[in-house]
Image 1 (cartoon, rainbow, N blue to C red):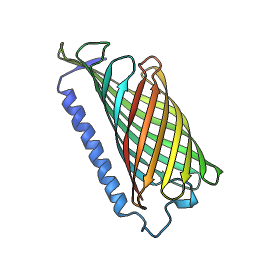
Image 2: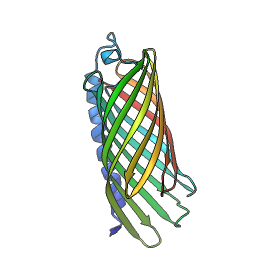
Image 3: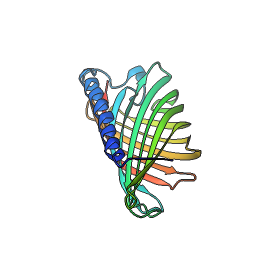
Length: 229
């Protein structure tokens, strides 16, 4: 890891707000350009929505490390055809009070792009298989030493998802993924449930559990908003 100045924490915060501001602007434009409320909710008669922008916030805890924090997420998906879907995702996490090292703060940022193939297994059920490629940044700040160490690496992996629609307004999903970065392989179990008020806007609950491999396991639970286009 390479030592950097203490100002890195301020730069990290500014980077996150810049990324989320850009995503919020994109989501707002998507919402205004969304289809009229009298039209159907989903393209290609799919049971769930595949054309949306997303913003979310989650409470974050690192198991066995007495560490808590906040995770911010943003991204979306776009349906290229009846079967192919592309997506992007950003997640920034800040955690503190790590019992491994006293007076230590941990920050991470990750941006991913994904390509998924959709299998329509039932009238209201889809299964997706996909691959992901991204980049991650990590920083650890030792308050008592007034030093910050950083590292970065490519992230690659794959996942399988089950998505279920319940009429026009409700949908839910669960996913299982594997990813590799920083010479470590982790497994993520994710879930979501969303309610769409109209063809423009929805709110939902999201939860993730990460089996960290050589790193501590972590849990994130929170809420998201979706803007359909």
